[in-house]
Amino acid sequence: MGRQTDLTCAAARAAALELMSSAGRFVLCGHERPDGDCAGAQAALASVLESLGKAVWIVNPDPLPSGLEHLTKTRRFEVLRGAELPPHDVAVLLDFSEPGRCGPLAGPLLAAASRKLVVDHHPCAHQPWWDAAYIDPGAAATGLLVHRIARELGARLDAAGALGVFTALASDTGWFRYSNTDAEALSVAAELVAGGLDPAGLYRQMYQRAGRERPLGIARALARLDYLAAGRLAVVDLPLPDAEEADLPEGDEVLDLLRAVESVEVALFLRETRSGSVHLSARAKGGCDVLGLARRFGGGGHSKASGATLPGPLVAARDAVVAAALEELGGRQGHTA
Image (cartoon, rainbow, N blue to C red; front, side, top):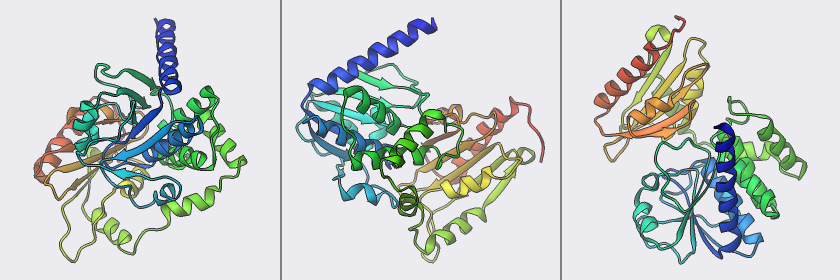
């Protein structure tokens, strides 16, 4: 059974490579709130395809967040919200496989007569709907899959492409600290550094350009920290800021601090948005898995890092997620704080 699955995956990847070789015009689509892996993979694949003489456009439903501006110095990232996509033969979904994850781009994406190709490293919970796919849930990042694609197509990965791959790897491995950091990720990173990439400079670009309000936003979030399940579960719920309060659009730094606490196995960050919905970011360590938790609320991701968007209000969303998390933890024997 395992051998047959391997052969099937190999055939699927071969079909995906053939589609990339034969088509001429590509639109590279990212998910809502594109992160470093999504945007880095887009930049890298654009470099690969253009080196093969293809026409490429990058489109996202949202602008790139702070810390990813270095990718825009050599590549144009267009923001489209429901507008018609540029003329293309293949639409590539990078770092996601469910059209709903690209928000207002989903309609134009599905309406286009182009063939659909998924390049992703997330576990897929739905039936395949695409024309071709290059998927490996065991890969540390989608950008790593693009590096494989470049090698398998015999394409040149230029400086901009190398920057995209390293950005993707660094983002999804927590700068090579998370449990998905494997030999392949480190080997590819070493190859890119040997080729001239500057890790220290990139780190400054990505993580050391925050505004003065960032520490204040983190402090505001941590002031709402609550430990449950004898310290195994850490929860932060962040309402919209008042006029004089600092906002915190992303909770990664808070979640990293919570996972540093020895007793914490699952950390939850719930943030109220201006649309009235609540964004959940969930992180796990040790033997815990938060992918199932996120899927309960229509989300997804990885076993150690997942997310979802819930309807408000914040109090109701928090109650529902905490109850589900406690139920998940109750099924595992854990230590106490």
